[in-house]
Length: 265
Image 1 (cartoon, rainbow, N blue to C red):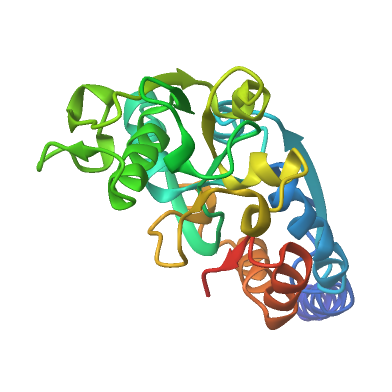
Image 2 (cartoon, one colour):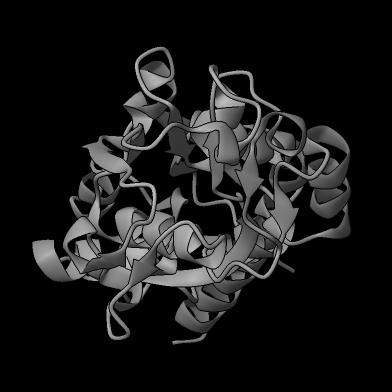
């Protein structure tokens, strides 16, 4: 009996020592899906911060708004970072996915861009304006245009507004629904395109200098860190959330994107 007690104490001591040397988050790789700009860039910036805590951050880049949530739900990822809350809620409800937001990190202002005109007032009547075709970003684009006095929507249109909710369109603009990643490529063929901030940056635009119209920092569409429901309290996820909302990251965002990306913390 005495030998068993001594053996137990030895093993407990050994396990405790291993935990001390291994660190609190020594559970291997944390795989996070992200679109390239600015999300993957921000994540790559904090790799060393997490490595110091025993977490190996692996950044998996995506070029669309669908695959990262599917991959997360199917446990191919531990988290993703590319979307705002209205998009997550709509997508998760439609696909019956059990995902949740952990923390808001930044806002990527939606902007109206044009290669043909310097001002929206120069757009001829009947001009084509390309907008995102996914439900939440289409609604966001139309609410943005309404806030700038270009169109008017039904009073109850809300975040899910579509082109069918337009009740006033003085210049009879035609709105063409396009997949968000393709919007920068439409600029040669349309009067203007409303482009999500990440795709504008990825295409070489400076939102502050190059957009004709730009959302302000009051936008409710902050980009968020997302995990499967129940994983928010995982110590590795908490460490990632803390790193993403550190002063170091705030300074990186402000210095790198010059107003094209706005910290949400």
